[in-house]
Amino acid sequence: QVQLVESGGGLVQPGGSLRLSCVVSQSIFSIYAMGWYRQSPGKQRELVARITSGSITNYADSVKGRFTISRDNAKNTVYLQMNSLQPEDTAVYYCNVRESAFDFFGSWGQGTQVTVSS
Image (tube, rainbow, N blue to C red; front, side):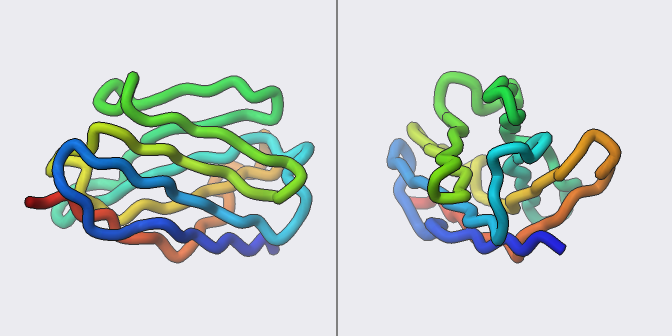
């Protein structure tokens, strides 16, 4: 089973930036899709950004223009660059990997806390 280790979360002031990393335990070269999700207290987990094996990306409307997802196949790592952070971005951020189109639920990391507060 794929293992995922996230890092990069923390406390940041509004308007600040963070970069999250998700290291995957196997080659990501042909992985179908990788994504970042987030969940805040009392809310459902939501998709933030996703990148496919062909590097096609899509983003939640709330983060378009502020967040960027990318992948480094050589390092088996997917990143989420978060700029212009706002308090409403506060959540636990989770990495998800779907190895194929039939891997409907994928594998999840343990999550990393992002807190945006002054």
